[in-house]
Length: 81
Image (tube, rainbow, N blue to C red; front, side):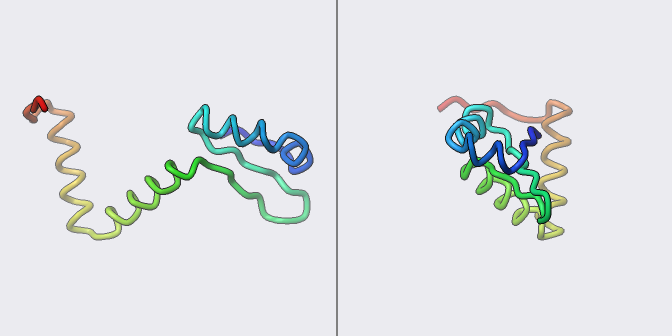
């Protein structure tokens, strides 16, 4: 994750936002006397929240993990649309 201090983030806010969306990578804004904050693409944030939600249910998490293992082993069928 790229990090930038608050002053530089403020001076170059448009460039910082463009970097976040172009690279699909969050930027950490380091503040001197306050907790750091993270700027991230809204779609990436929504995907992260959805993933947390899906894995918050133990049965769902187990099913997803097993499905991922099956995919890694090549146990899947490709479907053409």
